[in-house]
Length: 289
Image (cartoon, rainbow, N blue to C red; front, side, top):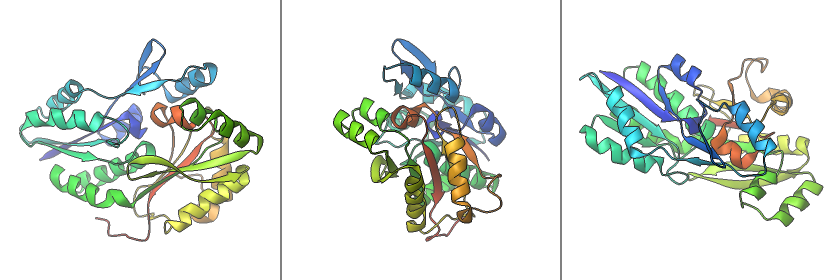
């Protein structure tokens, strides 16, 4: 039986990477003023940040509607032997999971649905784990059960370079943003229980990188037998390269072959350019398939 894996562009898996993995990535809609774009299709990550930097208007993303999922499920289930595994971004951050659940009702149990309880590269590594399990021959239901068992082990940490976009999105006050800018405060955010939360802050980039490293160690380190990913936001990966250099003792090899991707519009809207992030399965639990 063939398992078709579907996820959404909040995972920051590009269409090119999706093709390599033999999965489908459904684009969310990114809106700048009156202009609408399909995330990762008609608007690349680079183009998104160019627009974000150039405009004072805060963009937003729109969830995938039920008919969009129904169309994707129908296309994936074209053979009687096929079944679908759909992994969505956190239901606490978007209504996409609800849309997918509504659409799945039409297909008589042939669609297994998983709320990643995550977003961005946290969602991405769950999808990469699903691909591994699919290639091992597991069914959609078996994969869904394993993802739900392990999703609580996923850790996502990000170091932000600026407070400006948290201010624009109403996450912090202008006064806090100004004070943070004057003191060169670098906040660290994480995904906990399906939501993005502030977990710490440091003064200056070097202290910020050290704090990020400390959080990784607190989580028990990285389980390198499982998927993991590093990411950066904006037009340059210079800050990420510096973090990798400063944290070389935490990663295998020379650091040049680490899995790296660019952050897109779903999270990029709120963190702005210059953020660096890491997603991994904590090493303290283990028990992988």
